[in-house]
Image (cartoon, rainbow, N blue to C red; front, side, top):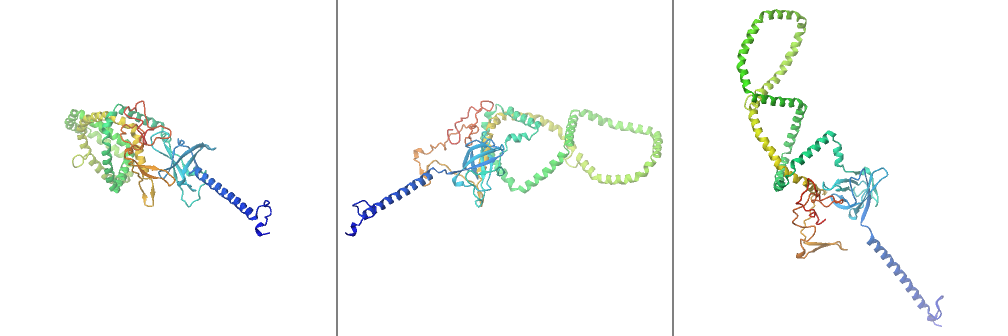
Length: 477
């Protein structure tokens, strides 16, 4: 029997040993290949279904009118959103936020603050996260940042609650007065709005000049503050002086004839007084003698008093000299007498100037009535302009800007995305780039808030029939 005819134990009868071994090796390879393919499919499924965001829990003293969907920012850049709001056992707000994978994980020592997105809308807030350095321990997904590392927003109601009831009542009447003042003057505001741009340009030049002489300007403010403090300490005396000066000026200007008669009658009155004193000379001397005798005990202490009085009188000389200059100083228009002389012409000018000023204010009422609802838009623009300068590096702050010409499409693919040119016919058709938005309503200058409270369309005193609520940032809401 040859070697090829040998039987392998366990092999089927009549099958050579080499054929059975080859069959066993083939089955083992198939099983190994199947296991590897299954593992690769499982890894691929995990990769495809994995979540690119990391979730953290932030504990605040109060939620500050946050709602689901509000933005989460780091250094002014949106990195996620608020996904949940819960109440803790100790009556504090627990916000669940998601952070994009490229900005995570966060590290121990990270802080968070609730800030205003702008004054447009009721729930227009966002969470501003300040990450801790990377050398600190990483926070696990779902980790909680406690209240000692967070800061809630201060609501406008909290500010008003710091005022006394009398102050709040005065502020309420002040605001209502402005509303009545500017009611019905909205059309004139459109005419004045075209001057806003040159006004801002001139204001910028003014601030540059002030900044150039900042030391002198600071010294001016300090000295002015000291002067105002001194005046405030004597505010009651100053008020009485002004009131009495006004009364005196009015009396002099109204009755100059009486003053003239007093000056004419003064010399005869003085002559008559001299005659009266002459007739009292004899009895007055006797009374004076008795006065001297009775004053002898007091005369012993009189020298000490006179010495102290002499010192006081010497120190008072500069005061009376300055007081004399106050009433009658050398030169023109620099003392109280000159002021009294100038008061009648000033009163005549005021009689003409004040009615004109009142008429000017009345005519400007429609202008400010139209501008008032758009004030939050202007404030939001100033705030967002400042947010664009929030990023900084080792060299300091810098401005992050992105010019948009709507000439490319952004493609998001497995290679990380890219830009592809748009056909010429499709350029300018993006919903985020449009023209002709000349009728925006108040609140249209910022992205639409999560609660839908902007743009603002009022049917009452702030109604604007010329605005179109569909003209908002990002196209049709």
